[in-house]
Length: 120
Image (tube, rainbow, N blue to C red; front, side, top):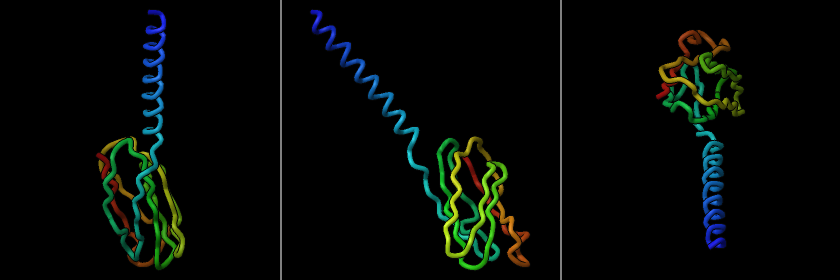
């Protein structure tokens, strides 16, 4: 009887430990990668759908000139240099529609170069 009880306790503890480890693995999942191209004077795509609490990495490229990426509501920004990939990684912590913009002057259409992060 004692041996059966020990086995049952050991098995239960193993299940609980496995469940905790499983939650930790899920919590540290790799961020979803979203490629974005910055061209004169547009981001492609200009609207990016995100989920609250899901880590994301936005990979930014520019084929033409140096540009910037700034999403002030999430405190992320990067310089986008032609021929290089700039990455910003963050986890949206609120829902709504949030602007992002080019914050390095890139020509006469610069002021209109923006997009929207849509977090649900």
